[in-house]
Length: 140
Image (cartoon, rainbow, N blue to C red):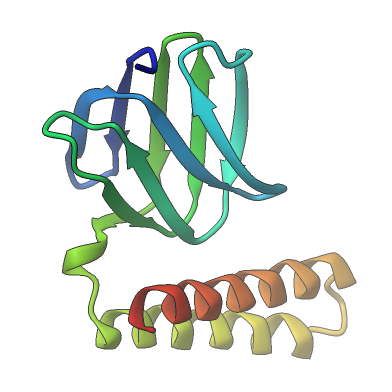
């Protein structure tokens, strides 16, 4: 049996989760990762994607959609501060379409700004691609 660790998920609107889990799959900006009780301490930024909890109380896998934010892994504790977060079961196709439209508008604006560095357009293109990929994973 895997060791348990404390997991907390907070967004500006509310605390979504505070429970004991065996592992947390994190959609990191630099790649996906899984944190467990003995993970080395670290902080990572999040990309839009699905945050999955394994071995949660009651045995069910729990999943949340996050739009971005930070994950703080500190020994037996993982704290996620999300820009926006919802249980995957509450995410609708319409909600994802709105987020994708916002990301597309931001990207189009960045591409049209000839004074802005190319890195801004690249970052907005990645955000748009991540939003579209997350919708594909959730909506099938």
